[in-house]
View 1: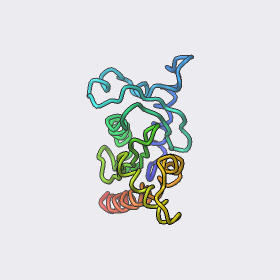
View 2 (view 1 turned 45 degrees about the vertical axis):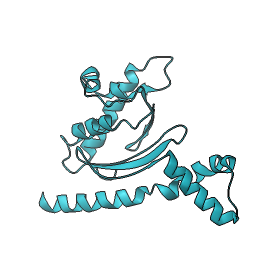
View 3 (view 1 turned 60 degrees about the vertical axis):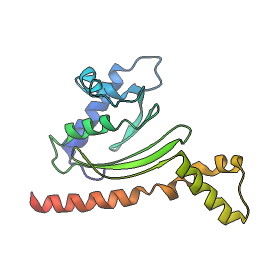
View 4 (view 1 turned 180 degrees about the vertical axis):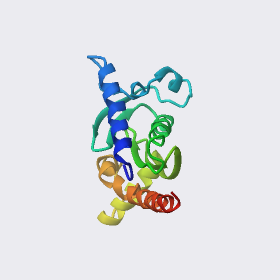
Length: 177
């Protein structure tokens, strides 16, 4: 989290604990929807990827996995819950597809997405192609692009830009409060 008071951090931890308590013994991870008191109601909002799992949560940093898309509606719902106890809560969410068909990050200030970066498969491949071509002096092969795309992703998706935007909003918001 970019900004959260102790009450918001505690609330997130309790939401994660709830999901872990509901976790099925043979499941990959806790179901992201299970952090909510009303998972079926949240699911009915639509836009929820096929499956969503929480892999880890430590020091206000949540790591998960979903199928086919970032679970943006779930991020919004989490932030809607946290803003109830901290009007200046802000968080950055990073996401990527298991095959790097897409990747991105989004910044949330309260229950609103205020900044983001996104790259689809073609943009990722073009970026890696150009970096490799520049470094090697020759046109890279598809295998080389696949081998290096994870390594070069951080140069394409820059979380620090989104984080800086959120910090400005938190600073402006605290001046108003």
